[in-house]
Image (cartoon, rainbow, N blue to C red; front, side, top):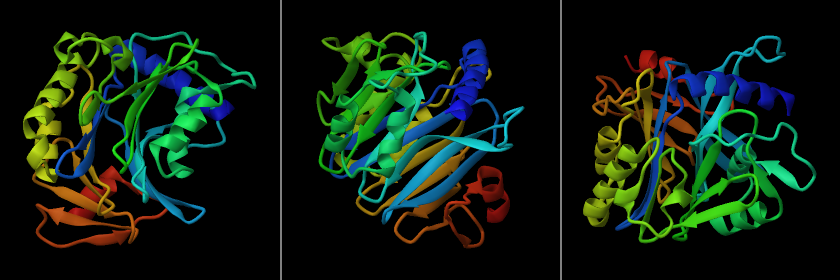
Length: 299
């Protein structure tokens, strides 16, 4: 618990100074089911890995924070992933900031701990039941919210103001999350979105509305390329497309959509998909692989 608090305090120092923790994610139920996510941040190492838990396999993206005066020199905070049952989560910063609770009481839980449900449950209904048991509160670092989606046609954004759990569902057949609070759009048109990430939200929403019936991985990357981070001091370090029907995750680094990696969650491997002169494949397990290692391995 103390390690997590230190991480979020460090995040708050960097994030509040430069809006460095952005990100955009979506879930689409069109001709097929797809999830997508742009990870936007300052230039830091990323890691991809596959965790196994009680027979379930879970893919994670994490970002590095080196913690001084900590027993752990390399801590990778999880921010996006999917399990082999098709349950997806993207955990992103939410603005404006809400003052956090350093130590939740027995009836509370930090909202970032909701991410751990993808290592436990198969669907959004189970996540909803988990959320309903305790009041989610913000931590001492940046305020956060979570987009959950599954293969049963359910997608939600989970938020909190430290007073109540706020669940925002889909109005149509897709759901988008940026960095403003999704519940601020309840009863409003998407064009009325304001706040951090509103432009990225509108870009993603409009693209999905026009392309939802013939969507695929390439169109997903086209969407993510249009919804890149425009904030000063922040870059789109990683773009990911999730296809739960095949349990494949396609990964592009630094907006280079000509060079794409593919993770097979079932087989536990990551391999070159396109844009590389030679085919490369390696095991992907709990030890993970850094984004820089991927770039070097692919050459």
